[in-house]
Image (cartoon, rainbow over the protein chains, first blue to last red):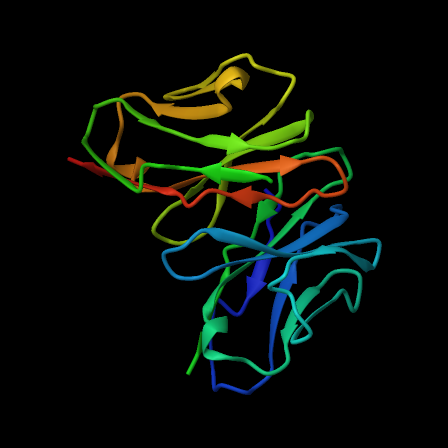
Length: 114
Length: 115
């Protein structure tokens, strides 16, 4: 069964460093998302991406964050200068063209900023 | 404003008991979608069900059933004859349709099923 794949599964980085989280969405999907979950808390929307541009972003998604679909298969989330409070599980999700089908989530990347 | 409330933070049951997880939502949209996701200890989010606001029929899938009541803005999830493998955090989520398709998650209910 097709699945959303995220790499790495766990990344440790020093405060102030840039990180890139990578995702390979399901191949025929058109809508892409990043969510994050701070440990023990709820899952929060960061950004949605369609037709090679951001369609919506949350207040969390400030200038330190950016997304890119560089080659038609990967979907990346970059955090330019990480802060301690960026430590969280980051989930990539994708869904196909059909209206309001469910989003399929990757297994997540746990980011730890030290 | 849109909001999803899962008032039960944690529920513990013994195997074979039935358990209901509550979900109450708020939205101003007349068309919206509701979801349940399961997050097992391994951490991934597993899709369980999607309902749209026009379909109030209850649904049963094996030991799982869902009760959608628009009148009370609730979308409750029942597991019948719970098993240890059902132990997970369960999230209810809402997706509105006007100008957005993001998922708004509740805070989750941690279900522990003991043998």
